[in-house]
Length: 189
Image (cartoon, rainbow, N blue to C red; front, side):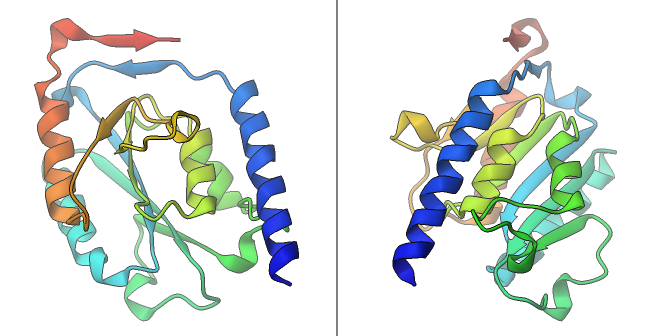
């Protein structure tokens, strides 16, 4: 059974690489003060991190930035603390195809939303979340540094000591995004 799971996972990864190669995304970022929307990709199996995300959401709401969180929860039933939250969408294992690619309307909607910033909080490299991050049409993607070039789908990479503290990580992301000034507008193909 493990052998078939690994084969399906490799096929899913190969399918993702083909989709990435066919995808054209224009990188765009001006300055943090102009940001209107942030998408966050998060490993929802780490429910203890949710209060940090909730605080970040509230902080961004206070400055009129819309935040949407897309999580992956490997179980069938979401924990009570993750249900009925308007800004959180969770993908469950039953919503994956046989190659572990997300196969839900919500996943496609998140991928196709053109967020100003996408922040990846998928530190354990959960494949369904890698899929969403890699194919996202967000203007600017932020995530942790990975030494394997094929796995780097980010426009800004952070290198932090492990274990990574979510509050510290989000603070650092905002800090570095604020450092990019208006005169250094980033546009690339």
